[in-house]
Structure formats: structure tokens, C-alpha cells
Length: 430
Image (cartoon, rainbow, N blue to C red; front, side, top):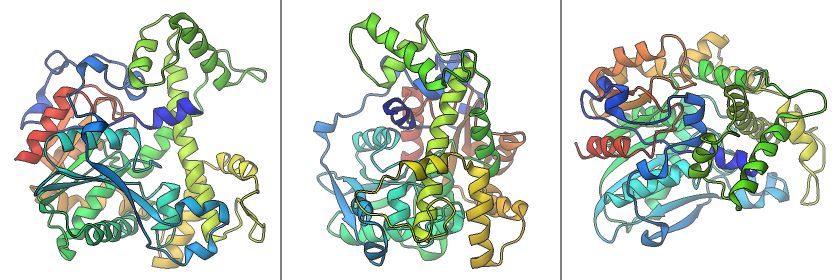
């Protein structure tokens, strides 16, 4: 489980000069050709950008009281998330401020978010780290409907959080505002940027989308399918996790110590014990399935729908939630969309079919805005596992030379790569 948590904390940082999309594999220099391996192992330590250590960053965590009614309706064992926490890294004087939106299910202190913070802080930005609208803490403490997936609603919830952060940090000297997000957080950033065009609280100078899903349903389906991969050595008596942990145990015995970080995972994949493509696919899919189960369980509990937790079931600090989480694991993202998201969408907005929902929550809904807004750019990888047929064509048509398409990197595996970091900072500096 600790390995799964680490793997969800891989990072994403991508921006480019005008013709970075034309970089060949040789010119780019990122070493991992396998997209599954890149997604899991990330960037080798000696190829990452230089960033400040945590000791050199003036940072602290803060809390916002946004949904006070939940303090009485949520079970007692939800006490840590009845207020929304975020992290602020501040410069000594006036500086631009960067908001970072985390990816699917990710907390504001997730590894990818932390890595982006270090990069931008080192470049002179104040940085605010925000949890994903799909994280259980955001759903509990900030979301109006606690049913993430309606992108316009998620953007409104995020915008309210960002306004509350600004009000709470009113003494912070900010020269201009910028916005970025990775994975699902990149899709959220696009909708937040459009919302700001009318509300004008921030007037974002530049917005960068890192590895966003184009068609949200396609990306979800791609990740869900990975859990169904057939893996050699797994049967009724041996689970997938036992196979992976047995390999890791043997690897650690050879090394003589345990260190669960991206550098170790990269070295592990260079050893004779490395995971097969099928095992890596299953591991990535499993991480996503755990995130989906968190969403399914939390949304059902907060809204008292009775699909996972019986409506009248008493829950207190001593109640074991494990049986309900196991039940949530049996409900994939398709199940969540069918049983929770679409019914809520129809009840609140008189919504229609699944096809109409997908159109409204994906980048398609913002096509005209994204095409006409020169301040928004995308960085993506040609081999990203969340992309489907036609997605890259959509990005090319919509963003033109504001799209940087790297030849390698999987899903956010190259975010800390020094080439990506340089391109990213160049974009925000104009």
C-alpha cells in the first residue's frame, strides 16, 4: 500500500519553446522509452532540474472553513477533513503567485504537487498548493455537491477556495497570478481559467495544462482497463500484489536497505527483477482504482445515497470503514458515473445522456475558448496512457504552436526532467 501511495505521487512539469513539439527522441534525451515504466519510475535523479530543498522554502499549511454545515453532518472520524487545508510557500517580498491544482485523488502535499512547488518557488514565485476536487479532503470540506466529475462545478468549487486563500493571505504581496495543474488538475485549470474570464478575481497572466485528459471518459476507461490486464503468475492462490512485493523484497535484500522513491523505482526497473509491461500496467491501474474507490465511498457517504454505506448505518471513530472501502473497490469509475454522477447531474441540471455529459466535462466544451486564448498552453506526451484516438489531433487543432508534445514520458513521468522544467519556466516568463 505504501508503494501505491508513492506511485500516486509521481510529478508532472511540462512547457516548451515554440517548436518543442518537433523534438526528436535523440534531441529530447529522456531515457525511458516504455510509457508504463516512465509513469511509474519518473525521471532519473541525475536528469532532474535543480530545485531548492524543503529547508530552503518558507512554507506553512493553513485551513479554510468553507462548509461549516459538514462539521455536524460528517462522521466523527472525518474530523481531519472538516476544514480544507492548503500549503503556501512565500517569497520575502512582492512576487507572482502560482496556483497548482493536484491530479486525480491527490492531496495538496502529493509528490507531483510538491515537485512543482519546488520548481516555481526556486524561480521566485509564491506558490499555493491545492488538493484535487476528487480528493476526499476537498470533497468533504469544500465541494458543494461532493460528487466530482462535473468540470464546471469542480471549477466553481476550486475558484471559491482560491478566493478564500487570497482573502486569508491578504497581506501577501502578489504582482500577478498564474495557474497550472497536472493530469485531471490540468483539466480543472482550463475550466477555472474560463471561469475567471467573467469573474475577474485573478486575471491569470498564464495558464499551463500538464498532461490533461482530452476526453475525460476515454482517459478514465484507459486507466480502468489496466486493472484487467492478464499477468503471468497470478492465479487463485497468488495475488498481483504478492508477485510485485516478492520482487521488491528480493531487490531490497540485494541492496541491503529500503528506499521507496522514484530513483529506487528507476534503478529497480534496470535490474533483472524489473516488472513486466503487464505488471506495470496492472500497478498503474490499481493506483487509479484506489483513487476511484475513495471518490465513490466519500461521495456516497457525504450524500447519504446508501449505495456503499447504508443510509442509517451508525458511523463513529471506532467504526471500521474497511468493509465499505472494499465494496467501493468493486465499483469502477463507470459504476460511479452511472450510479452517482449522472443521477446528480440530471437532478441538478436536467442533464441528458452519457454522451452529452462527456461533451460538457471534457476539453471539447472549451474548444473555442482554448483556441482563442493565447495565455493558455499545453504540455503533453505522445505516449501518454490516458490519451485516446483523435486526442492529439484535437490538441494540435485547438492549441497550435501552444502545444508542446514530447515524444516520451508516459503519464507525467517526465515532469521533473530538466528539459521540461526549463520549458515550463520559459513559458511563464513569456
